[in-house]
Length: 380
Ligand SMILES: [Zn+2]
Ligand SMILES: [Zn+2]
Image (cartoon, rainbow, N blue to C red; front, side):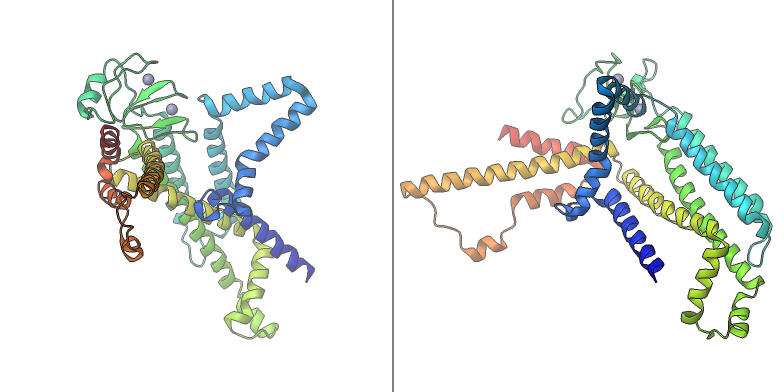
């Protein structure tokens, strides 16, 4: 009984940590322990660690940690590429060692031994293509092509020169401070690829996400079928019902089967859980980036859009306080308009909501559109 409680507590703690790490920054969790745990995992723990190193080893220790952080986070480096290759290689080897002896099995034919190798090979090929392909580096030889492909709108993208590259900056491009180059239709710098994702390699990046999602789903299902095949071949249900007298129903058999699987095939169960979680994360990333491609925008421009939303909110608050101030002054002077009825004010839509509704329908040109509105505000 005590073991059950330990397992339940372990599950709850793991779930809380995973949810806090992945979703702690969502507005719904603001002010809750989930957001505090998220802050601690993503930022606080590192700050405490720095303080601890400073207290024990002094400035030299802190500077060493900061220089490691600079190399890992602000300079191009292959650390995450090596970790990716280590993860995919290790998982494939563990699956081959623990599960290939059951293939061909009751539900899986022998072809899956080779199909899985081919699937992993294609995944690594897509990784290499994304990592080592040119993301669309703006150079003296091709800058005129990018300038004509992405014309300036003179609102958000104005004609200017990159202060580092000393080249004209095409619209929708960005200077990557890690790679130290301007990239056309810049999306983001990907640490896993040690490369920027831009105009020329977004297609490989999307294919990488989709293929690895499918790879994880394939691995999860294949191992599931291996275990189901073992269950059938070893006649576990027959033994349980005939020799142990367990009732032949799902509710009665399930605990015994789960216990048998966890005892005999714990590695495979662990791999299935890991691949299922990773497949969900990859599906989320793929849907996010596919949506960006369909709406012809980029991660870089999405962040600008969020900045705009917060700017609009601040502007709306400033306007409301100005209006309230005006109303109070005219109230003092006795020249104010009659106050709006409660019923009318309840049903009146805010002008901001109307504007946002229009903007959201113009997702293709989001950045241009919000800057146009910004310019209008400034002129007014
Ligand atoms: Zn540049
Ligand atoms: Zn970069």
